[in-house]
Amino acid sequence: MPVRSTSAKVCRSLALVAVLFATSGFLNSWSSSKPELWEGWDAHNPKNTKAIDHSVWGALLSKYVTTDSTGLNRFAYGKVTAADRKALKDYIAGLTKIQITDRSRDVQFAYWLNLYNALTIDVILEHYPVKSIKDIDISGLLANGPWGKALIKVEGEELTLDDIEHQILRPIWKDPRIHYGVNCASIGCPNLLKTPFTGKTADAKLDQAARDYINHPRGLTVRQGKVTVSKIYSWFAYDFGNSEEGVIKHLLRYAAPDRAAALKKAGSISGTAYDWSLNE
Image 1 (spheres, rainbow, N blue to C red):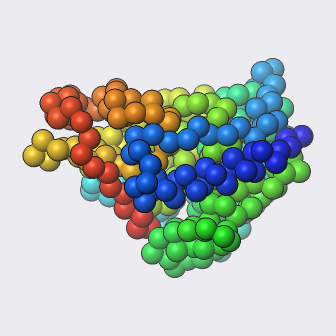
Image 2 (image 1 turned 90 degrees about the vertical axis):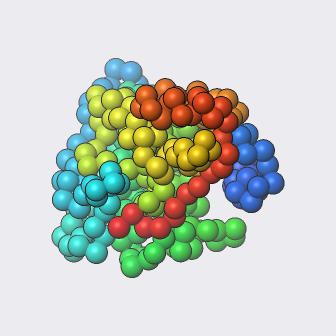
């Protein structure tokens, strides 16, 4: 059973403070702290590749996620029926009963990505209507959103959204594309996909999600020779090489030829932006 150490608790608190300082401009814009692993959650069983049923989540996504004319995926929170809200809660409850540390890495990866996104939608629905997820202040001291609130219990441990993202997904998989997979219910965030992640599809889906985001104005914009990127790249710079050069290298990997050429010509990033409005 995973056990959270005292040092992990301290590191997590310091990480939250670091994010606050980074957001306020007190830290280097292209440097951020290393995610801290919650020991035990990295356990896995390569032989157990049994798939997890995400069909309920898939049905909800296909029913309520639509793509607007700009390529932004929006979720119809106000149209979710009582029956579908119950289905979502039942789906989440079912996931929490799985001994996920006994599954293969690929199955685990899809599990955590889907669970994070399902929990986020559930939190929004619990507090709807809201203009932004940041208006949901349920996590206590230094809270500015629901990310620090314990929402579920898996294998006997209470977990928050922050725990899933910063102490499980990021430190175990060390994949910057995770930021295109987890959705914070905001317009500035990469799209909430219309289909669930699975062990077999996660890699291709994340590549496509990266391309979609970087080739959309909320991910990367070049105007009059000046480059503006999503704040995601500064908040989590560690995952993108922990430098401006590392961020640019990542962007170039997925940028369309015209955007890549403009980015190369500019040679540097002039600013960051993010829209916290609800992706409704």
